[in-house]
Image (tube, rainbow over all chains, first blue to last red; front, side, top):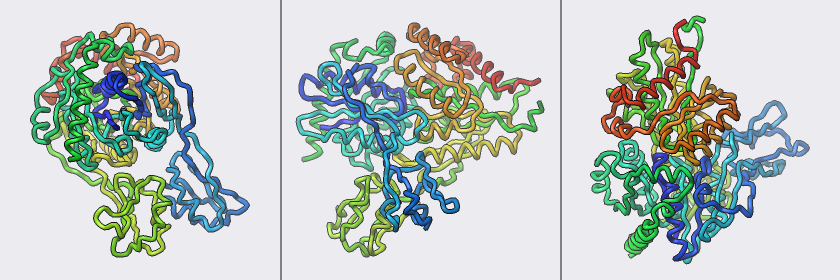
Length: 287
Length: 310
């Protein structure tokens, strides 16, 4: 079972819900938590893993073997991302523009291109609290591309029927969110009852309908805003699975790195019930 | 210095972590500038193009969308495809499958396609072409608080960095044509491609953070990003009273890094109300302690940008 926790708007409580969901389910099954918010990963502040392994997340970029290169310009022509340029008889490579697609390598008529790893981030893993397996991607500062790191992070482990994988998604509604959602069974959408939360939630619902992924809603900081969320959800037929009322004491505790289920242990049962509902929704969809 | 002879200054508002209050503060700045005595026009940009919220508060009169065309995606012509299987092994994005409607031909999943065109060159019968995609719309909108440049990236699309660059450039050209003093950019969360596009060439970064382990962790990353691009930064701590120890930790970090903390804004439960009413917080609640704190941050910011009258 693979569940993504996403939101659209930032700071609605994705990590709060994802980490506590992981802890609540760890007594039922093997749980893996993937921090896919590789630009601003925060899951480790709550689940406190001991990292035992760290590997570079590489993009394979072209290296021109000048002794073979005839400066025909074919590589520059096939690159869609302007990562190669020709200046006189030299081919220049711009690593930060390269998507690592390999097209230049395959299309070089002289076999003059080899691919070399260009690290743009790291992939870290280790065991966290309560036997949750923790996997994290981290984009290196000043590198632009988050999506390839998410793709590599998810590939560290294959989905398995007896394991619950929780993907903590980045904010927004662009390509990095889509990469996180690819192949998941369910998306748990954490929102807040404000016009900003609602606007960005609608963007998410658009993506999920295109990708044909079932979803349910968590309303976090319930009570701070208005009711317009309810009308939208009624129209789109998406169930509300959980409401977490706004509570200043909780906000203070979360700020220190305590999880929701450590502050309020009754949320363990509540989150297990949410999981139960998710399995029912997915089961219903398959039939 | 004669303000009319120099280019418009650019202020970028960033946070790393989402939901710290960038947009509420940007909207308040638009209001505070509009009511400033001897106010020079400023231009506002919402650079969070895949979760664009500034227009929900500044409320433009009407929208005139202009199309944003980004990259291209591969498309296989089922009439031409001979199902030879040359395309799928060269795709590093696992985007090519047998067509769900006709398993005798191959099909490109538009959600997975990265637009690299490797398959186009691998196809022996020219059955694959690259189709340019409209990836969103952008707007130049008049609001009661000045001009706003904003955009809506279509859900799930790439190229948000390019769209950010486009609206920033349009805003800057407009600012220069209208002799505006400053372009204020409400930035996206994170540190990746849209953030890099948003902070390129700016004169000052205002980092809006919150007193939590997450806020500080992500602040460090976004500060590193600004430094890499040689943009000077100052910090403003929002919701500062939620966790005073956290505020202290941010101040200690700032002192160590030699970054000025230009203000603390207390938590105020009326902030969501300003979103619901679609009005800047400082317009609705000018005398609240959060409203006064934002005013103070604003005054400091325009002094740092040297926008005050000589």
